[in-house]
Image (cartoon, rainbow over all chains, first blue to last red; front, side, top):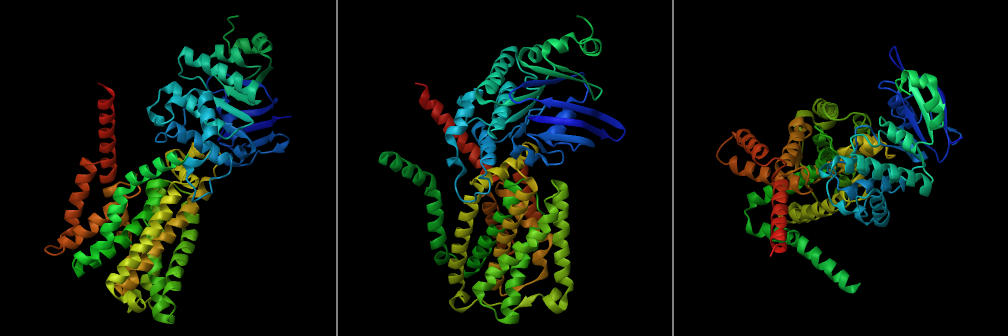
Length: 246
Length: 326
């Protein structure tokens, strides 16, 4: 199994944000985690990426237990994430931002005397071409548009050449055109580079548009898991999440 | 290929012309200024090295250290004690000063890098004051508030102008090393940590480890600065470790521009020379310095060099757009 959570639970004081979630994420899937606000999606994400430590339960990645590894070590294992509130380097150029991921992943960040400019030029431009930011390579991160920032963060994470990419609301705040191109790009990542994507999203058209598998969280508990059609047809999901309109 | 290389060299000369000019000025300077100002010039150079070490933490790593003087003082005390107490070799004493400062930096840094922002600043301040008090109170070992006198450099280094060239050489070598560090992949990681520690950590960087390495490098260079100053001044005193001394590189960085490599050097030169000049007719130096800092903060936010850089860029862009439109 590629990524597996076994009965994972996270408590904040008396609040049980994630409750006994056991889930398998298969290699090469585009897997969506959905649920109403406060369902525990972000917390579940944080348990996988190491932002939070689980109260109980296990996280296994490629058969290896990573439950208690710090975030930076999980990244070295091939798990990278984006954040719900776009997290970039405001005073770095677009080029420098993407370079950071590559420097880290290729293990040269303890090189003290060679010029960082000389590293991985081709690779950075390849990623910039992929996310459509090559023409803004020299622009500062905080002076590009919101949608471009989202794509820049995606580019930064791709620098670490991840096997599993977790995207927290990847199209949040994007225009319909930007959303469309991001969806196409995510699909391309999976098809061409063999990445596995786990994402949360509010926009149901995005979820049902690209996800191959959907898991539904409600009040921290996993209530449904399956192919989009199965989840759509699930009574409980209809009742509490889709509003029972179907 | 050859043409490309020549063009590259040409642009390097173009960009580096002011460095060459400065170097020429630094070589000629001791022959045209008075003996008094030669002493001030040496002090400015050494304090600039101190400020550069500080700015590695402040400007590049994004953490304000308010205890940097502890390492400056430790470098100085190591040299003073080795030379006066055991008649140790001068050059090895300098190295020992760097080593002791770096080693203590490792211990202090171990605790400080766990914190960020104001907590980092306060903890460095606390450690700095702790080291100050130890040296101040431990009379039998350190000479306490008397300090240590009679710290002489060997041979011709006793001649101020020779010592000046020696300091200049060490300064250039140190600045070069620090310049290479901040532009290396390691330096890039430092800046990324300053810009967004969370994002950097989630790219696989162990933040505390990189902060600790930086802390040790900064402590070692501060120690080198202290180790250079004490044999020139012939003495050392506990106040070199005090928080007031730690404040000097902070002000220099703010004055000159913490986001530029040479900003703290410019700031330190301005501070040192104005200080020397003003002390000639008034003791109210802090009032004047305070006023200058106020003016800089309000009129040139980001410091002098940062302001100049922005203006220069604006001018270049205006010229470019003027050229572009017929």
